[in-house]
Image 1 (tube, rainbow, N blue to C red):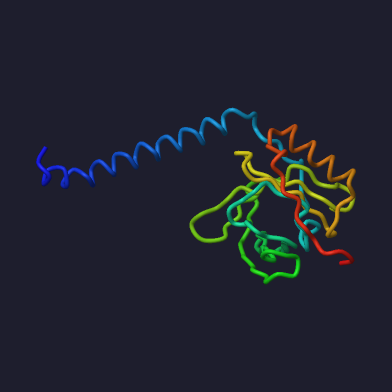
Image 2 (image 1 turned 45 degrees about the vertical axis):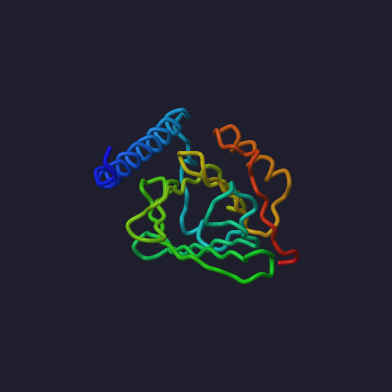
Length: 190
């Protein structure tokens, strides 16, 4: 084949290869989501009680939290029913430099247990509350239907081991790869 003709076909070949890869990734994601039963959430969340500061106890690895320690999330209820979100991560160590990310969360049904979180427009992510301490909202298990993201949250930097183990067991029961959980270092005495 003449070199000129090959050079003219390269963009077409690259575009075709990209389309095949994109289709394959989408098909894999769809199949993975379909391989699990529907993800149940808690029956109802009082967003006034859920608002406030939460400490990350553990998480499944995520690109956007790489190297994070002493991670917190603060939720504030707005008058329009949405919540402002402020996530703080200390890079490399508990006392390392803090980075923050802000977002808006909105309930998608009357239970308030399924939220969409938007860190930048137009992309939204699922934030489903899978387990929650009903009496005092002391701990929560949060994930999403694809089972790639999971967080154990607590109102205090350190969660009682029995509660932590209960939330890990719940995550396993729901089909999350809890063997990959990273336990988040938090300061003592806060």
